[in-house]
Image (cartoon, rainbow, N blue to C red; front, side, top):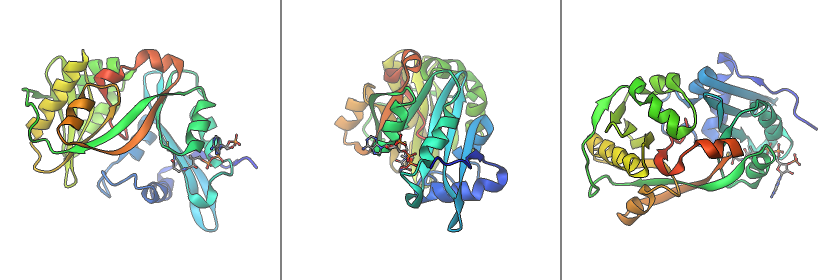
Length: 273
Ligand SMILES: CC(C)(COP(=O)(O)OP(=O)(O)OC[C@H]1O[C@@H](n2cnc3c(N)ncnc32)[C@H](O)[C@@H]1OP(=O)(O)O)[C@@H](O)C(=O)NCCC(=O)NCCS
């Protein structure tokens, strides 16, 4: 039976959506009560709810963010009791119904990859979630900049413009935008550590330099983390200095997005793309 109740999430639906997100551990890097990536999906993309039943208000949810014409599928999550019953397919067919390039980070769940391939996306390269200490890495100089200043280079490496999303992110507590002019990197420092991304550069080395400079400038006493495409020059550098692979997704894109995104000079934000 196809799931027919899928609808845009309202403000009143947010506790139900966050209940599902929490069940999958998606809110760990975000402060309760403060804006999070689900608010960004509602504001700058699409956030859909699949209503639940007498056991709970939500069966699942899905969300996208826009970068110009490009759609970044950020979330597709269905609670275990409702899985394999068409809920994910119903959410996805609404989230990806527009023409235009599409990209996502697919989990290892075979149902996810199967659904995404049938929407025109192809497995492209691994996306590695790396974590490690900033100490012992090169520390090139960077200076603090504005989100607006990063927007053009971000659009070039990420495949589309998202100035509003970057400005929204830069205004959150602990977020700083850094630049070397040839590269940029956002950092967010919380009690959990420092998250890098999005970041990019004119060349792969420019991107790596901006990330390393931002890491050094943030100088966290604790762990840093970032999501980096497998083809990026930071991968051998960081793994060679003792960083760990905490998790792995698959970077997927359709043919048009494949020609737009530069995975060797782009470090996406894990939740914002
Ligand atoms: C992945 C997920 C969102 C899919 O939602 P769902 O409601 O369970 O999936 P659906 O029932 O709508 O569709 C699953 C499809 O995968 C197919 N499928 C199942 N196992 C498969 C396999 N091993 N290989 C290929 N296809 C498979 C099913 O046949 C079905 O396709 P069909 O409807 O055309 O028959 C959901 O299972 C989930 O939340 N998983 C855990 C969280 C997760 O990893 N989310 C993905 C983040 S990228």
